[in-house]
Each structure stands twice: as C-alpha cells, then as structure tokens.
Image 1 (cartoon, rainbow, N blue to C red):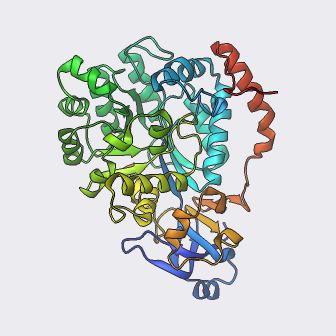
Image 2 (image 1 turned 180 degrees about the vertical axis):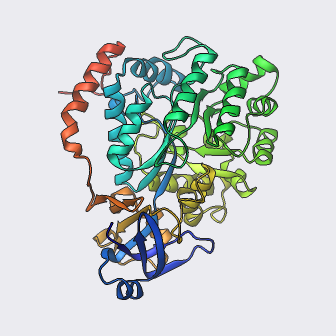
Image 3 (image 1 turned 60 degrees about the vertical axis):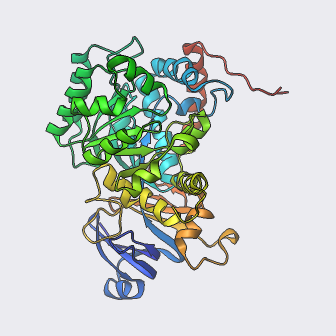
Length: 455
C-alpha cells in the first residue's frame, strides 16, 4: 500500500488536543505512522501520495454511537409528523421492519452508511434492529467503514422477530461468532431494551457480552414510559433494576437515558456505563429532552458519553456535525450558561470521547501514532468558509456540516474522494430504493400522505 500524507489544519484530539496549523499525518499500512509539520513529512517521504491542503481541516473519523441501519432508511422522513412517538414506532417502523427482506436490509444499510461516511462518520454502532446481520455486515464491507452489527433481541411481546429467551440468546451468540472483536466490523449483543426484555434476557445478554469481550447496547428511557413500566414491574426505576440484575458496566452502552433521576445517574457513573445521546430524535419525537435531559451534567461528572444520529424518521440526517452543534446549543440554552459546553467538547464527543464510550478509544478517535488511520478532510476553500477562523473547532462545528467533507480514509484506505464514494455508486441504487419504498409500504399496509395538497 502506498504511503499517504493527509495535510491541513489538524485537529488531532490527542491528549493535549494539539492543533497543527500546517500539519500532516503519515499513513502507512492502515495505521498512523507519524504526525507533524507537512513540510517535514513531505521532505522525508517524497514518494507518498499527498491529500488535503492548506485550506483544509483534518479530523479523526467521527463516531455515530446509535444508528438504525435498516427499516427507516427506505421510508426516510415519511412517517407523519403529527403523531405520538409510540405510534410512529409501533404502527409504522415496526411493521416496515417486519416486511424487510435480506435485500432490503443490505440496501438500507448501504445507503445509510454511504450518507454517514460522506459526512465524515467512519464508525457506526448499529442499534440492534436487524433481521439479516450478514447482509448489514456486507453493507459495512461494501462501503468500507468501521462499526458494530447486531440483531433483534426481545422476548416480551409479539412483535416481528420477537422470540423466546433461548432463541434470542442463540441469535446473539451467532452474531458474536460471525464477527469477533478486532475486525473492521464487530458483533455486539444488541437488545431492543425498554420493557421488552425479560430479566433473564437482560442478565444473560450482559454475561454473554462480557465473556466475549464485546459490547452490549439497548434502548432505555427516551421518554417517561420506561420509568412507569419498570416501576409497575419491579417497584424500581429502570436503571436501578438493571443494576440489580448486573447489566450495567463499562461494556454497556445505553441509548438515550433521557428520563432518569439522580440515583440512576449515580449508578451509571459508578458502574462506568456509557450513554449514546441522540438529541435530534428527542426533539423530532417531542420526548422532553429540554426539560429532563441531563447528559452534559453526566459528562461533567466523568460520565462516558457519545453522540448518535438515530433513525431516519427521528434524527433523519446522518450528520455528526449537525448533531454536535445541536447538543452544544441545547446544553448552553438549557443551562442559560454559554460557558457550560462548547464546540470543543462537542468535537470530543464526536471523536475521542465517542470512541472511548464505545470501547474503541485505544484504536480510533484521535490522530496519534499507532492508531487506525481513520481520517476526514474537510474542505474550507468555499466562500462560506472565507476567511478561515482563527479557531478551526469553532468554524467546523458552528458554521459547518457534513457537506464540507471532501475525502475520507478508513483503516488507511480512501473510501471517499472529492465527495464521492470510491466503492459504491449510490446513483445505481436510486431506482432500487424507490421500488423498495413502495413495496414496503404496501406490504406493511401503510399509506402515507402529505399534510398539504400535492397537485
């Protein structure tokens, strides 16, 4: 593999958060081999391919800690706005999932991951609603990005792919064996969560993940509903109940945790359990994050926090910069204190902080020698970026979004060049996706209509 030098203003996200104003990253054999001044690296390695340039920002690849890769993509932004979140999920999303074929799963995941990497996301944690994990893993491989894959895990209720506890655990074990830790795609134990898992499924799934040295992720408390359900079930709040079952710990990533009380937060902090925070979803679904969310407090107390984009009928756009800016704005406005959280903290959550929260901080998340070469080149040559800001973190977060991404390298391989995938032609998938959308609506018995007249 030819050596590469990725040049520009480097936001390294290393231990000192070093910024190189005319820097370069030497990529060799899939790893970061050196970080320093561009001129020195080019002089020392004259045969290396040079990417980036003086009006570019180079960051580590972004981490998306919670993304549904199937189901929603093929009906993206189609679920009506003016319905309750529970109706949107169980009357729309779940029936569409039930109608998905293996081809649909791969197509949906391919489109989602193409959008994600085009916006600088190089690592995605799939949220555990996949019927055909082998097809989703195939999508990761096609697009050339890093991430985790799971499969449906629920044993309460009669929804699609629900099963008895032993069958669910067997499916989880099969995923772990098919995609062991350490690869570009890793298997995780993934449960639906909420009140849709028995105590045995929760506890055995946690034991399975620990034995395999991998992660466990599930949904909990995006709204008050889980608190009510667990109080009726056990007389305890959800996080307290899970703590008693031995589910919490550094290998566990809970999606959401919006409606939790102080004791639940303390349990998450004490056990080093991580949270995936998806602010666009809570606003889109009206789940009360502005009144109940304490994610920045959790972070400031030493909690492990990452950002997620969530489904394409909640977060809709798979854009880490967009999520980071929203999380920052919410933190400042909810506290009425612009000093409590800023662009620099958001970029940490999108990179090294997110990597640490999902258990990959030793491999990705910063531009440091020995780490995997996951890098993003952001082009700031346009009029919207002129003149360049003195502090590139402010410009990237407050004035930017994924549209500035020009080139992306994952594991040392360029997977996006000049804004286009080097591996998949998305235009060839357009007709297939439109046909799949119409078929899925028909099979799910759904008939979406615009709120305003269309002529």
